[in-house]
Image: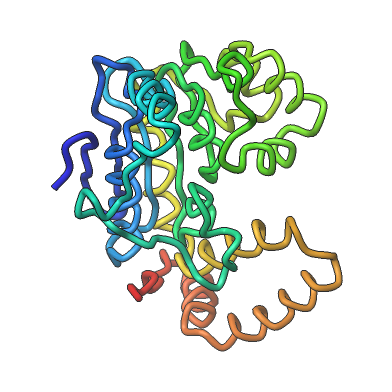
Length: 279
């Protein structure tokens, strides 16, 4: 089914690996369609608790393939194919998040399971955007990030102007977008772009281990609801966020997960939480 990514599931982890290593995993329209389709597959797979997105070879993702961009420019934008043209039409993401979270690549924030970008190497342009839209970013020690849009005569693309200030603040966001300078792992960790830093060869394994630990200790339903709360409430007034949370608290205490969590604690044993059901 997939030509430009590798999709594997070793429960509780689904891994999506960009697979154009000779081009530093530069994105094509097909690769984006394959990634979205694979994310939808992982979201519907009840054995999957979380998703890791990484790159084959020495790169994470170098952004859009320059040949694809050149063709797009030459056609006046008409060369952009749709997902269904590849037989890969998919609609990942929780509709309860709201329509604004289901536009473009923002669907990553609406997916009902944790997503970790394992940035094993260069991460630029749209690859940088995709990493920012993941929930966590684990970065290889030698990896670098760059927005790159200003050097291509572009604007800040696909929601990065919304999410990046919420991760690192406005001044740092403008600096990174204006200069398109390269950010190495130590600086990325210091400013909050990277959540954890590991040797490049270990970064994907560490991301998988993180999800495995979540699966062993945390309720997947709780993970889903917390992700929904955090992203939805970024754009809500405090009162509305508290009101929505109060309603969800009542719903969560009536669930079997709550009873299991209490019983596991009292009985001093690992919890046995239910997985998130497919639609």
